[in-house]
Image (cartoon, rainbow, N blue to C red; front, side, top):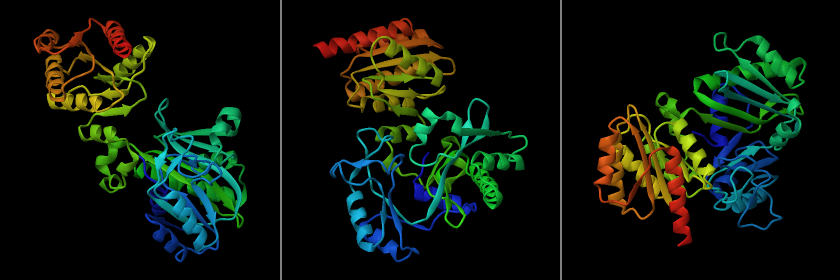
Length: 401
């Protein structure tokens, strides 16, 4: 689960992390009112969407010469003009894709005199099972280009969970950022606070870009991106309330209600699979046969008939789907339960696209019999290769017709 920048900064400040004063705004008038509550005389008006690259982004509704989603302002009039440009319009950045995201929230912050900018992040390193601290002297909007062109400027330090954060970790980060004296001490203290925030919120990512040194030699978080482990949200009902559903795909929201792992993709063949690894393999073999998956969908190892039915309906709610491949290997999951869910859902939604089903494992014969006796145009497959070949052929025939 991700949250907005203003929410991230409010959260980090509770752990003692230094951030500029700022006020969220949901309307133009709230943005203008924020001016009177901030020190000034410089203000920053920032579009709040779940995507990076806002400063270099462009609004669909404005001309190509219009400024992006992060703007400096020196008066109420300039704040008002920026808010009017942003609210209700669609911001397209390198991370949103060409469709962009509609801006419904702003964050008006106090302006800062910046001497230097850095990049600092805490992430989960899946290869080591540890928290990794990533630091670079090249902070700012082009960190992706730095990673691509000059990877030697990015330093990674892993933290052993058996010892936790140690003083040498802080010294290593300060050295990576080329900070000395009091600034090095500030960096060490800030790392400790960020580490506490990471553990205390079950975060999966805390990204500070930029981390700034001000003209008066203070370290300040100017932008923050925070994401949480969704599996740990039951421990943090207060954080769950920060979720902004308008930033998420409606089908993904519906899937989360049924505890389904669903991610919408750009293809035209819907996939329903049990097990993340098998789902990845299914998507790969669809591409190997010359087509593209429309989604990743893992129904899990012990799904009920109702859960399978919900998954099937979510797939079919995507207008891009021209065919469906169901690939189930029944261990804990029983093939007859899967078959019953498929038949029930197909009847409810009046299935109008090709459907290929590959079943294997527990109660597979009963499952195949349920599909065969359903009277629905379901194409059985012997194995995964056969299933992928059949669904791609069926979709291509449909497109050619």
